Image (cartoon, rainbow, N blue to C red; front, side, top):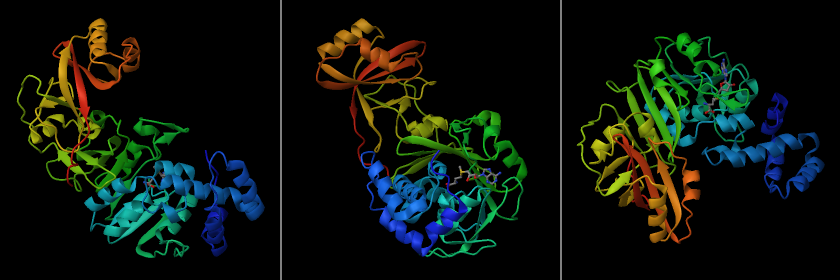
Amino acid sequence: MGYGFSRADVDFLVSAAGRAALTEAARLELTSATHLRDLERARRDFGARAPALIETVRLRRRASAKLADAGDWLFTEDAVQQATPTVVARRRARRLAGRAVHDVTCSVGAELVELARVCPAVVGSDLDTVRLAMAAHNIGAAWHPVVRASAAAGLSRQNVVLAAADALKPTTKDTVIVADPGRRAGGRRTHDPAALQPPLPDLLTAYAGRDMVVKCAPGLDFDSLDWPGEIEVVSLDGAVREACLWSPGVAEPGVRRRAAVLSGTGASYTLTDADPDDIPERAPGQWIIDPDGAIVRAGLVRHYAAGHGLWQLDPHIAYLTGDTVPPGVRGFRIEDRMEMREKTLRQELARRDCGSLEILVRGVDVDPDVLRKKLKLRGSKAYSLVITRIGRAAAVFLCTARAPLTPPSS
Ligand SMILES: C[S@@+](CC[C@H](N)C(=O)[O-])C[C@H]1O[C@@H](n2cnc3c(N)ncnc32)[C@H](O)[C@@H]1O
């Protein structure tokens, strides 16, 4: 749950006294070993302000893993969890560069700050006035009707206005609507679009016909949505983070699906369904490649294969094969192809002195942990087992994994 910040807490934290207290509190270790001692000391030094100070220091540290500006920012626990990572927000903002935008669920401003860098006019609104007060500090924006400049962050963004407003009641005209409905209902993650806050169907109705970009959970059922624009699936450092709906007016013409494969190091690439997808049907090559989850989720496995001279092990399964491995991805060199029989696998792995085994499964009903136990590995070498289906039969490939070579350029 985290500490429940009030508007008075935010007022204190952005004041000169609050900033000085935060500098002091930032010296506390705040590890599980020092927690009680730190708390005692904070209570002695800061009295009733201690919980807000300690929580802010803790959340800043946590947020620094995904937000570039976290060092001076104010957060609630949920706001950190819900914030779009800077790499993802920056990329989305770049696609909207030059447009006037309205982020109708702006929270503490993780997307807003990136939009403000490249868009001439930016409005941020949210129902939660504590988060809005934090956003005003975080991005140095004017909060209508109370205008605040952020001395702590040293920023003054003339092009951003913040306001408390319900996203379901349009308050701006001629702006691109950016929305990121909350994915947590009752403390748990939900995949039901109607259970989001605000509900996705209501949001789409409220802005029908407008240019809009809506961030959704990657598990969204694309087919039932029947979205007329582009659906972009985004991964960051190998983990699929979101599916983003781009309305026809802001989508790339002719594109209905896109995969954006991003990395914290800055290397990234995109792939769309407008790219070629002609691939040969062939027997397995020397390598197996497991494409990035964004490519699989966006349904662009063939397009990725076509771009890298690969082909599929089976037309219905997302594993690819070929004689080379694209840069930036792990490859599994095929050492042997075997039948799905435990006894044969156990004997072969023992003969090869296998001690650790990564098991990848797709298209067959095998629990890797259960299988690994049954294989009784006692050796010293590392192997990977790719278990999949080719046609109607299960196929097992014993492989050695190779780390990614040079990452792809943006
Ligand atoms: C997932 S968070 C947005 C996070 C934000 N994109 C970021 O990166 O920091 C969703 C936000 O929607 C707000 N919200 C929920 N229902 C709303 C509504 N009807 N109108 C405006 N904001 C709403 C919540 O208060 C919350 O701050």
